Image 1 (cartoon, rainbow, N blue to C red):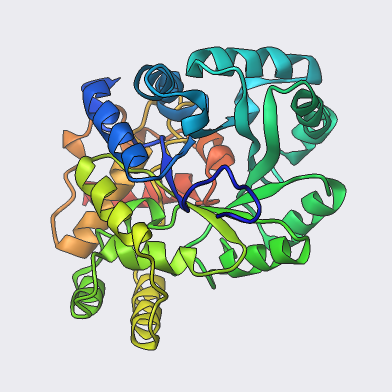
Image 2: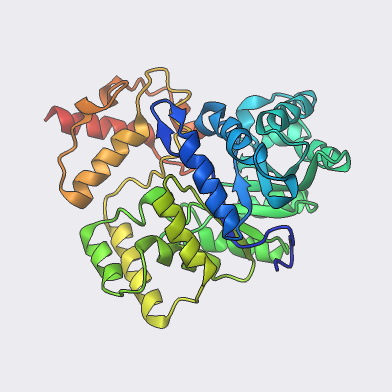
Length: 366
C-alpha cells in the first residue's frame, strides 16, 4: 500500500492527454474498454487537465469512467492551468466547472499546472495556492500539489514558499535524468529534501523512448527483457520517493504492456542500467528535437502551425531514414512562423521553437 496516499492502489497512472481519437473526437468505446481493463487489473489513478484535447479529456472521463464506476473505485487528478484564470476569484468557478465536466463532487488531487519561472508569479499574485487549500477545506479537493517544468533551483524556491504542498509531478526518465535542461535528478533531489512524494510524467518522453533510433533500440531489444517502454517505466518507478508513474496510453496494446510491467515490477539489473546509460548517451549525441508532443504550443499559434507534427516528422527522418514531407501535414508550414514567440512561452521543454522551425523551413526549401 502507498505510504503517502493509501487511495492509490498501484503505481501506474492513466494519463489522459493522448487518448485514442476517432477523427476529431475521443474514441469513447475504446477508452471505455481501456478504463474497464485498467480498473479490473487493480489500477485506479487517472490524470487530466482542462487543456487536454481542448477540454475533451475531462468530458471523456465523465462518459467512460465516472458515470460507469463508483466514486470510491478510482482516484482522479485535475489541474489549475494558467490560461484559465486571471485572479483568485476565477479559481473556484473554474474548479466547479471542471468537477461538472468530469462528473464528480471532488478531485482527489488538484495540481498547480506546469509551474515554472514563466508563470509562477501569476499563481502567487492570484493567491492560487492559498485558494486551492481553501477549496480543500471545503471538500472539493483532497490533496493539493503542483506539476513542474523548470530547474531545480526554482523548484526549491516554490517548495520553500509553499511548504504545505503535498505532492510534486515531475518530468522524469532515464534520458532526462542528467539533462542540464530538464534536471530530472536534481529536481527529484529537491523533492526528497523537502519530504515531498513525486509523481512522474513523460516516463517514455512522449513516445521517444519507444520509437527510438535503430542503434538505441537494438541495445534494448538485445536485452530480451521486455518492451522498450517497460525499461522506461521500471527506471522511473525504481526511486523510493516516486509514488506514481503516469503513462499517456492511447491503445489497448500500450495499456496491457504497461500493466504487465507494473503488476510484477522488478528493479533494473546492472546490465539493464548500463544499457539505459548507452541509450541516453545516444540521445544526447543525436540532433533529435526533444519534443514530447504535448501540443501546448499549438493552441496559441496564430499561423496554426502543427509544430509537434513537424518536429516528429523531422525526428523520424533522423531515426528511421524516412524523408520528412511536411507538405502532407495539415495547417501552416514551418516557413509561416512569424516569430511571435507564443509557442516558446508555453513549451514545457523550453525549446527554441522559432529557431527550429526556421531551420526546418530552410532545409525543406533546399
